[in-house]
Image 1: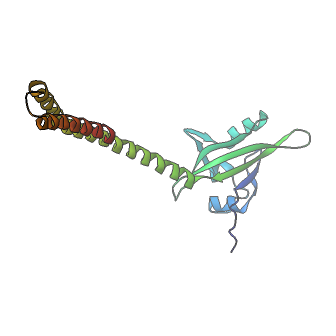
Image 2 (image 1 turned 180 degrees about the horizontal axis):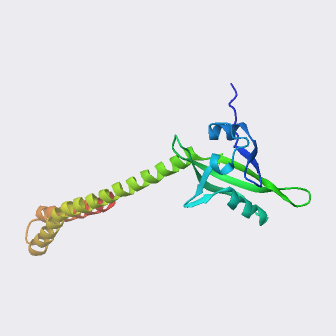
Length: 191
């Protein structure tokens, strides 16, 4: 079966704020028949803390401007709010009299929820990485101390006994110093 493409809800309303035309997806978004209903009562849109009502849309339209894909929240009485992209433009008559506005609402609720989940995961990962860094620091200190002691004592033995013991003892002391240095390098690489 061919997947149906979801269409963005489109609403056209007059300068008095009454909805005169609407797409089927706009009706579905509102959850009822919205024709001849006031736009403000059907769509309670908010841009952060500011309500986007017909007066605001009309003032922008009268200024010859419009809204282009601004993120808004649509509040519903019986379900969680939706996040939408609002685009709105003026609808002019031939003699440049403002008839109303055409509004397109693109539902980005799922995308917004996914973005928020990714932000939460990133914050959790950052917290986890902080804990891991603290653990690595503690482990690094706990592992380096014994190796440092072995290195120091091996160097002291070398200084005090080099040449006074047999060749095999000198080789063992040198081997111990090199091994401790390799372990330190390995720890640096690991941590």
